[in-house]
Length: 215
Image 1 (tube, one colour):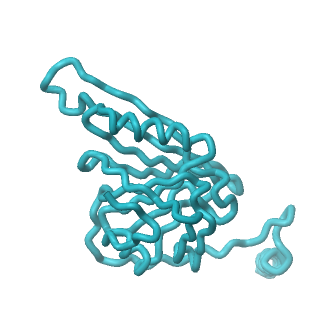
Image 2 (tube, rainbow, N blue to C red):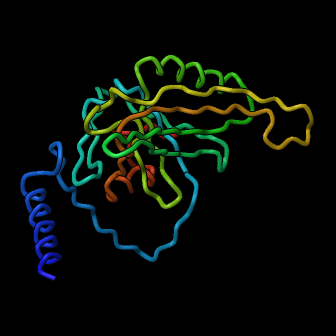
Image 3 (cartoon, one colour):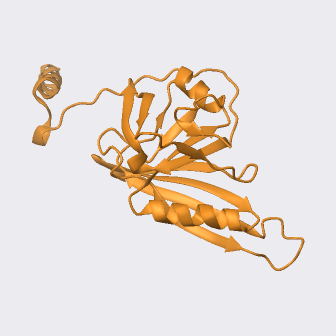
């Protein structure tokens, strides 16, 4: 019994040392956040998409993991892009192991039908892609997310045009035919940040005129 007690005490001592000085190879224990579930309605999908060139943004203010302000470069603004109903999607795929985790961010929208106006949008996104694009996506719950920015990289790992395709279809009965699909994508080491609720409400409410050029 004394043998097992000594082993247990040794293990506890090692754990205590690791917590104070760090574990093997300089590793230290991370504190995992608590999470409290809220019983509220959850609505899938997204209601709005806004994009701008990364160079249009001078500064982003983040407070406690939420965006509380964006300072634009002179009079430049985010531009509203109206995709087809229920076609705007935002995905965030994380992968990796141990200390190496990366996230692929993707914003996608579909536009019917091909036209000169859609071509103008496509060409402008292709031109902006060279230096990066930022997107604001407002989800079905009214929460707006900034994609293409993170606190460590700023706008250096912004979105770029990943997909720009036209599908004409072959028959009049094809529901998804005669449409243009555009997807913006980027990879970095961080999840996308939401806008603070009051600031986000001005975006979803259509009153953030200093930030967005609404249709």
